[in-house]
Amino acid sequence: MHGLQTLDTNLFRFLNRSLVNPVFDWLMPVLSGGHGFKQGFVWLAIAAGVALFLFGNRRLRLCVVLTALIVGTNDGLICNTLKHAVSRPRPFVTLPDARVFGKIGDGYVPPEINADGVNLAAGKGSHNSMPSSHAANWFCATMVLFLFYRKSLWFMLPLALGVSFSRIYNGVHYPSDVLAGMFIGAGYAAAAAIGIESGWQYLGRKWFPRWHAKVPSLVPGLILRNTKSQSV
Image (cartoon, rainbow, N blue to C red; front, side, top):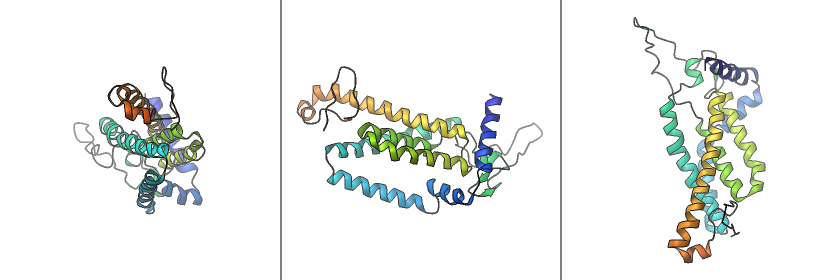
């Protein structure tokens, strides 16, 4: 376990310190939502979602609703629960040489060992590093959009990878935090889509036959065993 932590820390230092350049110093905070871009992106995403829901076809509307539902529950239920359960300090809290958004040592909390050998500073600073919510949410959204529109992978995957890398470059996550977020986000999205589609195929046919006849699939790009997915 110690060896994995050492590898994680060394890889973090390489990505956080050795790849420093002026372009990344501007771009990576932007990808993480810094420089005021987060609020603008949120409002743009909401406006685009509302517009697509109001003026798009049925497939687009389903995509918007399920993206909001799955990403929202992934962030609020899955990631937050895991972060509080693991309670792993962010790298800039425990590594004095970590570069957090361009500043070295910002946020570092030095140990305060008392007579009993207990680190009194362990509860100080920003914890909740594992997993990365940014990585989880972006890969969650990427998976949902991929199930509806295969070609969306061409622009969503580079964005998701860029945002994920920015969390390490900006010093707020270890590589393992980001990797875990990727798998959790994509895995949860796939599992949620399968669960929703399976529930609709069983309960929809049984309880809402007229609605099911009009909307035979809630995730048109997902083909389940013993069911025939139809385009909407």
